[in-house]
Image 1 (cartoon, rainbow, N blue to C red):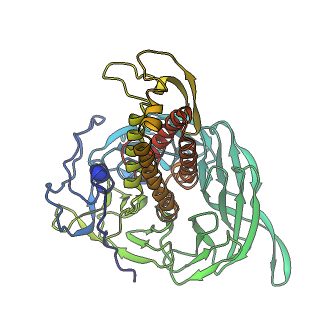
Image 2 (image 1 turned 45 degrees about the vertical axis):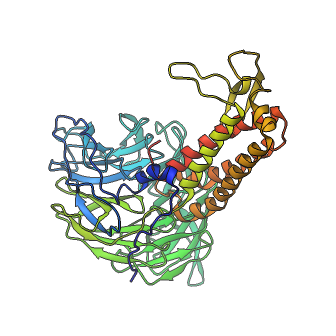
Image 3 (image 1 turned 90 degrees about the horizontal axis):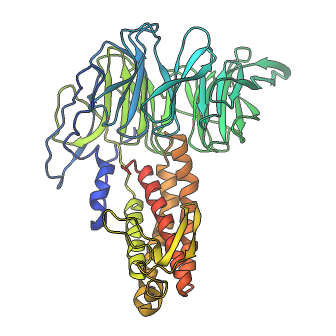
Length: 556
């Protein structure tokens, strides 16, 4: 049995401690935000503890009701962050379809789409790239309606999708993949049309004889916009796993087959090599693990719920009715709890390792979070204490940003204009560029801006010793960030959102390397190199700050 993990004390730098409080909002009591407007319904407000000192505070995990006050059968839920999410369903399968939305973890809900009194069918199957770009399905009995939002607020009809599809995912506004029973289909126009890409069929050897068999696709998962796995089972060859992989976004697939102990029903890949497949029923089947991209599979002594989902490479959940199974070590060991929810759960979402949501009938929505041990509220259900994010990366990046800002100020580069004025070009230059491309400079003779000689030169030459020492200290902080990034990605990479996880795993290390190049430019010593390098450095470090804030699910 896995013992619950107690959140460790965090050693944060004083100058950024206030910024980091947002990371642990689920652990620290806070005053609720003002009520958001609802669609002809009163806001739903959950009970929260009063603010108190956290000195020596002990914590516990809880489930607390944040339900919606309508008799709706919720069929799906998706949270892009710990606090912003969507719930979909209907009063029945055939009527009352609607989508509700929250930005404060379910304390308040608003209707975004549909009406519980309408004859529109229920809505489910949320898929999101980030907190603004998402899709949902409204099954109609023929070609199901595909709904889409580009701003996280307004939903429109984007196209259709096969009624008998089992899974789907979009990797951009226009490109998507669906598992339509026995064939993988792709779209390049946002779902208005779909084309067959890969049939579910293979030749396998059974009892020494070769057989051509068909199969049915069950689960699709993209690990990046290019790489994905699709899992299938066969009614003609029981217990066989059919695993397809694409490396070009779904246009081409390769297929491998493996014989298990039962039919594969669900899967989840933590990365391109490590994945899990549940074979058989949730309560009697078995979990299998691969560490080589599906070439070999090892049976495990456990069978978590019917749907598996990981928040990050270490923490995952699985749901089966009112039983929630969880792992805190990457799926090697699982523990389970049966909870007395007032209705049977239908779906769950795990946006972060210390925050989760389950939904069910009669408007039921329960939120998992970590609270002080003394916290009490109506309807609270005790739950295991899971761990939060405990990494110095956020503090180190904020420290680096402050150091770079101080360097630019000392060198007279990129001085901010006073309130109401247009920001002047840095160091007598106009700049263009972005976080991914170095800024270019054009000399200027403006008398209102510090010249290259009085700005950058003063920093690099006029006080060379002090400036060089400041550069060295900032570079030392960057080295700390560089050493922390691989550890953070390995432990906390976001697996809930395709784009966020992809950026964390690939762009974050790339941005650190780009920052090192900017430091190399600054250390050349001449005034123009210092000016150009600092301009470039400021742009890149700002991009790094925003990316890390996204990884920690902090407000931008």
